[in-house]
Length: 251
Image 1 (tube, rainbow, N blue to C red):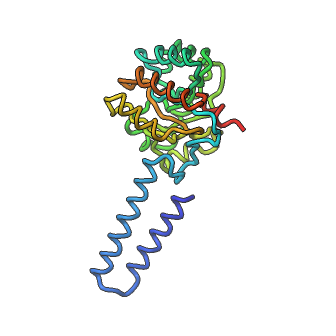
Image 2: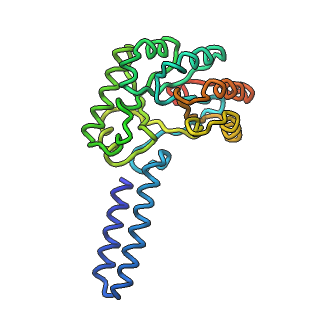
């Protein structure tokens, strides 16, 4: 709705600028300026999953004593098993947003995630760089395919989805309509796939962490193992409990 209202306002301003009897140069300046602002808002809203511009997203909870650790882009044959062992050592639970294609290839690992008490959720089938630009029908098919894969492996339906790269737009909003799936964002983005120094990543998280947060991590992060251990120590030190997203959102 916000997108359509903004678009209507943009068209109205452009129409008035063109129709209003002013100098041609002034019209060009107004049209150019409004267009730049419009595009900037659209881009910002698309890449910022917290914007709530296209899709209603859940990025945190009001629970003061709980926190949700989430892992994207798995399962990963190198790291996921170690992640599960570490979570078990700290008696922590987490949510894994799996890529459908990877889940198919590593169904045993996905089943182990589920059987270990963690939550398995949807992160599209392909995680293609072009996922946000695909037709709504194709996006919907990817989501539904991954839903079927998760249910086949775990025996349970997934009611949670995180769009690849955290990007939302009208195409994704249309694809999600009527699917009865909650879109999950995050309140803390670790940047663990780009930050090579685990200590710097942890320091950044430590400064911001509080009850109700949803933390974004990745199975595929190069320093995810040492970083996760330090993060769980911080969570324990702050008297927080690491739970699944569905538990964090439970009323």
